[in-house]
Amino acid sequence: MNEKLASFHISTSTAMIMATIMVAIMSVVMIVFGWIPHLALLLVICGLFIFGRSKGLTFDTMQGFMAKGVMSGFGAIYLFFFIGLMVSALMMSGAIPTLMYYGFELISPQFFYISAFVLTSIIGIAIGSSLTTCATIGVAFMGMSGAFDASPAIVAGAVVSGAFFGDKMSPLSDTCTISASVAGIDLFEHLRNMMYTTVPAWILTVVLLWFCQGHMAGADLNQVTTLKQQLVASGLVHVDALLPFILLVALILFRVNAIYAIILTIISALILTYFHSTPTIEQLGGYFFKGYKPAEGLDLGPVSGLLSRGGLESMFFTQTIVILALSLGGLLHSFGILPALLNSIKHKLINAGRVTLAAALTSLGVNVLIGEQYLSILLAGESFKSEYARLNLHPKNLARTIEDAGTVINPLVPWSVCGVFISQQLGVSVLSYLPYAFFCYLCLFLTIIFGFTGFTITRLKPLSNLTLVKA
Image (tube, rainbow, N blue to C red; front, top):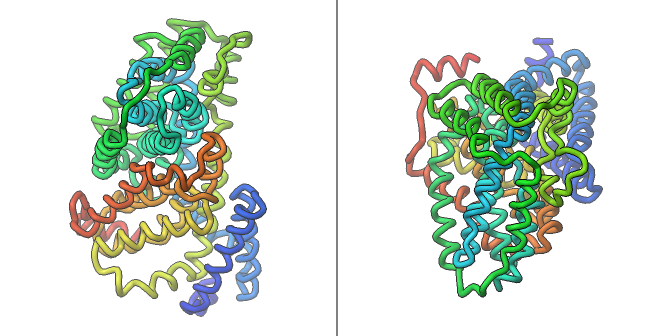
């Protein structure tokens, strides 16, 4: 096998042609055919099998390449199991519903756009899903926009900004977990490092939305009242239900390992659950596998969809796409395709600014060409991990960059997965809300600026760098 690989050379032109073909296949399959990304990845992997066989490689050899790629991100696959369990536990204990309830208190008729942004930020962090936030709370805000005499485009931009802030900064978010894992860092270390670009972008978004705020008519808050009543009717709203969240934040601040922090949070949520209800062992097992579901017979309206979340089963879609994408990355790297592409620009990647720009543009390009959020993170992360190590840059810089250019950019692409879904749910086209989704592109601008200025860029110690390169 080693002899074959020693003579296995891919020219830059061949690598570029193959990369173009792969991007074209995935674009057609996902954008034109409307298939899920798993099928697009499998088609490309099958194509690479044919290419590998033409070069004399056995299936066992190529399977080894894929396994090596998967192992590089195995932490994310494993962590997703615990996140699914934690979401269920936080739901059944009332932690997430209670956070939502008090979040609705923040709605202000005088600052409607800012209220939409702040509340969707809170809900987004609480449930870790931007699309769920847009499809529930976002739709509610769009319904209220008429009563407030507000611009639908600006409201949609505020909702998208808040939802993707939550998606980016929630420990329950799959994109957050994937970014940390592909870079090989702890989840909570990644969250802390992202604050350098995320917090300024969040504050600037509030300021810009304040400038957009014109005169608002006296508003009817009946929809907000109804949502609050439905949350109370679920029987999950209790002041002490916020304790698991407080514990989780404390564990993050004390830099406790992500797995341990999640396990302790689950235990605290379970204890709290039995203070307010008595689910049977059978029900508990069902919640942990299929996700929490409100009691039957309760008329909770749209709130029911918000509360029906979590469980191991909810993680399978994300876990399988991560496995396939990492398998593809293993093949691309071992076939020499990624190294050939990087070697063509390697002489230009001489500092933090240039490698940050290159990684950001790669994530941005995958979003535009393929329209898939996960792939924009995984492919860019796998491609530039070695370059960050070569330049003595801590991998948490890479994790932050691919979040700033991958996670939050996807909803700004009209044909992307997030763009299509959100525009349908909110009834506003992507191009209409794009100018007002301030948070999304502010993150991209800030991460590039910080890369060139060196501000908040962390470097590796010489010993750490040697260890990383050897690995």
